[in-house]
Image (cartoon, rainbow, N blue to C red; front, side):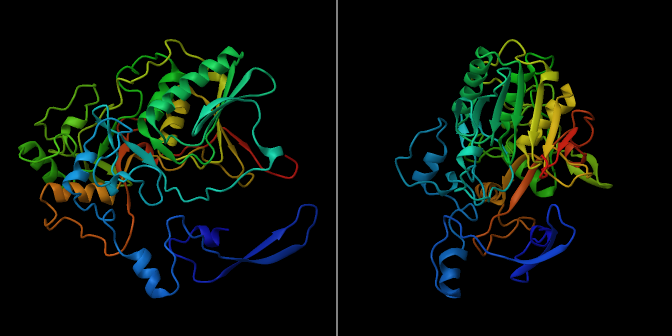
Length: 427
């Protein structure tokens, strides 16, 4: 199906030719598979090109990070998850297009939440036949579900995403772990099939929970990273540390939001983008910020004081579609502790990757554009123009350094699975 999947734009034809050989035969059969668009749940009905454009294609207040009204701005500054706005709803608090995370991440417990997520556009109304539905359910919440296999020794953590209300997700991890251990679990299988990522601190928390109190995890339970330090971001940081701007501490480039690799907070007047660090990426030298350390500690809930499973008794299984925060978690477990990785499916005889896009922290055009407007830099010659359509542009804002080589980025390394379980009629 690569004829469809590899195209960035809609296919030029309405069908693609698919030739196959049925199991047990030697003859080829060719079929024309139609291309059918799926209307999104937020698509406004249209009857012709004019209503399609006017109802769905014009930019909205959330498309370009337009400055909210006073009432909406006040709601944006609330720091406790779950509080309801008493005024106009801030459109930037809703999920971004093709995402489950908010357009501009909220501030929770005094810290802006950070996300690393893949574009999320798969169908939401799929239900499995009853005989294929998981059994042995123990407990769960949202994307975190715990099961026990029939052997009475193997627990399964079905982790569909790292998205959701962070407090409840952490509780679901801890409560589920206690529940399966109480049932006698000695091994753990983590299913990350189609996990497109989510909250970075959830990935760091799960890593700390399963690794136990390993040396160094009290300083960095995730991966260090850097952001690109081109001229426009340098101007943003310079204006923030010079003072005289609103939203104290809320800008994405504010040094108060970050720590160094040693765990020490950046000072309010620290220009962490100047001087930039020269890093080669694919043979091209680029400018990056000072190395950024952990921003998740301390965790609101205390992780276990002991390692719950021996590393040789943990396996991470998926279909290779594990990205962003899911990649960060899987890479940490595989690289640091040699945890087994398994990919289900794929062409037999072909090396399968247990994860895809790594990133380090995802943003979109909207929060950066909103910061430019708030900082008075929107008219700078380097600032991008506003979208003329209701568009979405994702950004890999921060890249994560490799745990095996702290001088290079993990994004550009290979992640072959140790084991591949092909999906064949015989299996």
